[in-house]
Image (cartoon, rainbow, N blue to C red; front, side, top):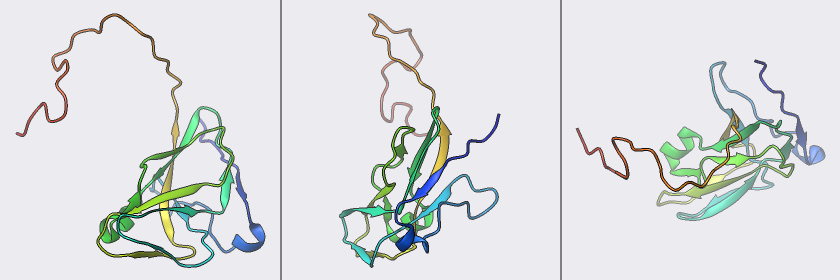
Length: 152
């Protein structure tokens, strides 16, 4: 099975050619880092959600999605994460990839031009459908919800 090739379009090549396109930082990395194409420093206050532009759009092939996930260092060191993690870029979306960051820390955080703000992970999509029914099969768990299995 071949890995997909995903076309990427720089939306503002005359001003954003200095912003790296998504790429893996190591050979074994699952995600490709996406960088901020902001025109100046952007301060995210504690509790604030800010949309960060990346300067590119992409054509995700049918049967795939691109998930927008937090960068672990940004989250662990600064409390800044992707608010809708994982965000999904669908195969029919052609607009600019934006990253919705939230600052969960107690101090402001500055995003600078070119900062790596998220990682993109490509995944296959299974096109399932839901079918209404009058009953469900039985399981050992049944309707045991959050924390149902307890601590061991």
